[in-house]
Image 1 (cartoon, one colour):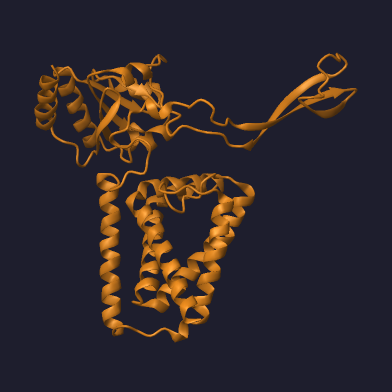
Image 2 (spheres, rainbow, N blue to C red):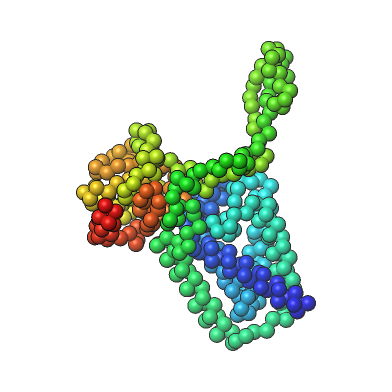
Length: 374
């Protein structure tokens, strides 16, 4: 029984620590997931709390795992782990049944699980946690109560600072497909022979006021007495999807320039602002100044946004604004605004508004590199 208890502590501790850390690395991604849940359950009025809840949740997970694994305030950690599992196990069961959001986000973007896989994981975890909870009276305190609470408080403070740093300066580890070193066009390729999506397609026809459902093998194609009503397609099995499958850039007039951007052999700077109205004006102005500098130096500069065409055109500052899907922009960079530097379609630099290099850096590095390429 003692060995089982130790194994349970290690499993629960490591999983909760891992779950908390990967969420803290990308707190904005967790906030987007909260937003998806709020929309799915029609409680969008909570959207403004998304980032706060994201940081609180990852901190609760991490500190629970830390306490269980290290033995510092272990009883508190066991109770915290059990409370989290009591909340999330039935919730993930509901998600598995209804599937309003395809990925629960329990491990951020580091590991993707289906809702049923997540529910199965939680059933195992709550069982292990209950074993520890039942035997919690056997737990021995390592240090004095005051010392343990001081240690826990310091760990919590450091962990929250870590989360806030990732929020401000971009994730310390980039789990997204648009990471530095990626050639975007290559990540959009669908290899030959990979499985495609499998659908069950049925057809609804009507005759004499009676509707009937047919399969693709027996629908009345040549019987004019039947009137076609609608077609239904249900996804049975998801096929291969390339890591990047939704990257498309269009001018405000609707002209697709995706290939032009990806095939450009020189340097390009992409300023990413998912919604212009949601970004602070001083941060946007810094980006606009960089854009004008890039134009002077012959460096392509694109402002990618999901804001409406009229809003983008109203700025009229001489820079090029282009339309991109909002979800794609959120995936490219976790910042508003954020920036990526490309050459030959390869991402060679990625920054948030907070650590964007100044114009001098761009001038020294890009001009020097351009000279060496000649």
